[in-house]
Length: 353
Image 1 (cartoon, rainbow, N blue to C red):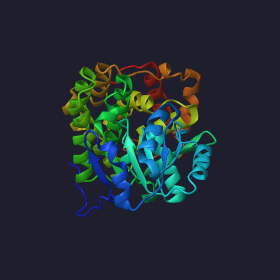
Image 2 (cartoon, helix red, strand yellow; image 1 turned 180 degrees about the vertical axis):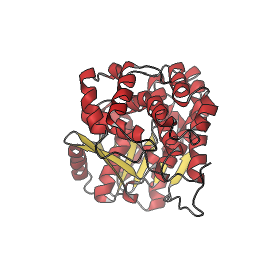
Image 3 (cartoon, helix red, strand yellow; image 1 turned 60 degrees about the horizontal axis):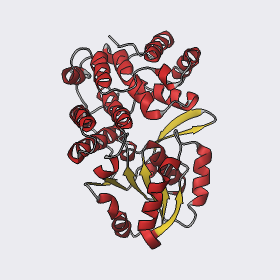
């Protein structure tokens, strides 16, 4: 049984959280409470209509719309956004990890306060973590400057999220919690957050798939998103996130889908070295850790093979080499041949044992 140090510091910065249908209409009052007057609204190109609606609703409090957020937060887009934010005194980000990542990257450079409205379950909004890509390499950092000040979880914003994206985004969030269970700096609080977050998705995702407009189920999964994101803010990540950052930054694979596919394989890789820490996963999903997570993902219709995301088999050697460079701490040694086999299994979509 793992013992914890007598004292630990959760290290969670103060963040205002609101969850409820229609809470997206309260941006103006949140700005007023913070003494803010001019918001630049951020979205991806695909969500620009939502951004326009938010900007219009803000009226004189609206500064402008920047709708060029992109996967993996390319620094060149961030630099353009910082210039466009001149004269604004805060940021309003409506979207998933790409948009919230851009908001964080701007805040890192400008220290502008952030109000975020998540439209997926990735959980980035709840963390002081930023991943950004330059010259084909994705790197992460932690800083209180990138932690949003206000998070507005509105289940109506995710009620129309396509089932496919709902599934991959939820599995992405679960990956934060699974890795937290065996993190080097795990603590009693992080364990409880992780288990509660995983359980919220295990119970909520099947209900959302059965009835995508079920706002109660959507709220349950949004709460899971907050739990899983909050645990990511508490502890360091390991092999799973290193692999996802490698494949995303160097091969431009889609973020949520990559997390969904790699989750059971990375968990299986670490199961022998962290069997006790991962025992709640086996209890929740049945069977082995990797097999249980794989079966759950398959039951939801999640993507299971990296080859289906467009990754070529010839790229697996390069991916393995990149993954073992500057490795994150991990409970099991990160060895090149073992990582190459893990990637092969994930590329083929084989069920982990």
